[in-house]
Image 1 (cartoon, chains in turn red, cyan):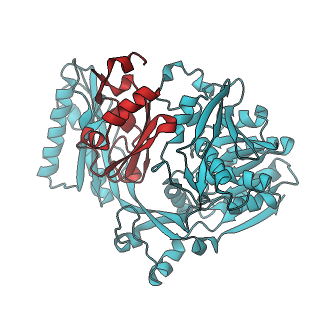
Image 2 (cartoon, rainbow over the protein chains, first blue to last red):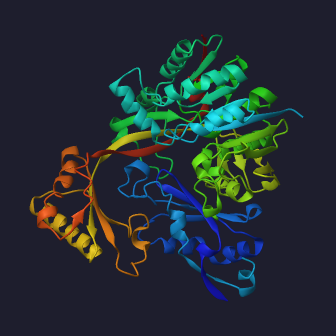
Image 3 (cartoon, chains in turn green, yellow):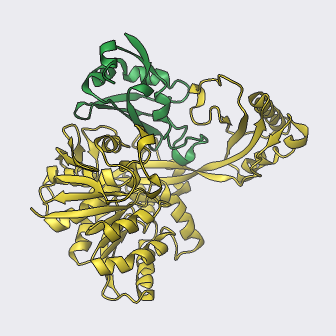
Length: 112
Length: 454
């Protein structure tokens, strides 16, 4: 097993609706997708964003796209144009998630 | 099998129109669809309309139409746009005016109205129709008097109806982004209202196209460095078959990239439950969608599934929610971050001393943590420079403005080596957003299509 930052493993894009944001995380292959299913839980994502994101986090699996979608509430300090934040549209949430480190099997890692 | 080609014209108010011109010229398309309305664009347009009742549509429609109407006429391309914003009738008049100015005849310009429901809110409230916030159940009463705009997301039907009436151009207010792209398919292929799977394919196509460059290489988190020529990015073009299957591509010779990876990123963008994406026309399920690379910059999309459209439509309102005041200035190496932090302490103490209180004060250090907040990793080595930003929230515009005036004295009486002071900025109005669901027929009763010809 190796610890590896998500930035080396996946693609991700985030966007907003009101005070809720979503982060789509996309794996390059099935093996990494299955590691994400195990490692990248809604609870981990919520804990990762402590201090930025205050609502519920739900995870939706989209195996046909080797992807998962996180929907995070109370994420923008009021949302879009009611927020004092510089990233008021949540576009940087996805890149911020890329800091997170997960445990990954070496044989899966060798396929990246 | 019958196929039509649809191009994406714009992804928001402010987007470049050059890719749309390129697509119209050499994209071999029959339709060009413009999504100009993000969630709160209507707030900007409502302010424009308050200042001048003939305004309230997007300001760039004049230039867009001047560039495109000659091509519309020459090639028989139809334009669909929600650029009408808060004043679709005004937008229709503006388009007709430009057509006359260009000497273009025989052009039918349709308008769809009825999405603006602000005047109806108090009546609905009096009738006991619930307007509570759909995300958290809050009651609307405290913000009712502060509502700036209230518009329903209308579906594809009235736009398709305008096309059936022979419109060359359809201009609307708050028609759902993806519905603008679905409308030509309904009009051309005669898809039935309950043909949910085909409608789902059409909405998925619209969803992939509505953010323009975001599906063709823009804002791409993968190997973004290898995407060529974003300076002349091609906006997406969809080739849609009568059975709903479509290929997403872009015009040859343009920059950017359409690949399975770029399509995947856009596919889930701003979607919540991937098995139930609610739109006015159909509930979309993407959990069986298949993507297949079928050539250079060509991705085939199949497998969207649909179920019955909701009985309600979403109404989004914006309400005045106070003012944001802010100021930004830079500090240079050495000790740049420490200097900026010291300046933050000075400003906060001065606010306290003069009794300047705010509902919220936020400090950011641009170059360190302004985009990633508390998760930003502390700098590993000393930074060359850092910008301090202090932002405040106040119900009073004057108080919000006051924060900026505390900054200039820092130049002579604060930490050393301040540069890049961006001036005393005007306060910006903050807008809260309110969403609720209203019975479909109550909205649709008020939706109208009108066609005028030059």
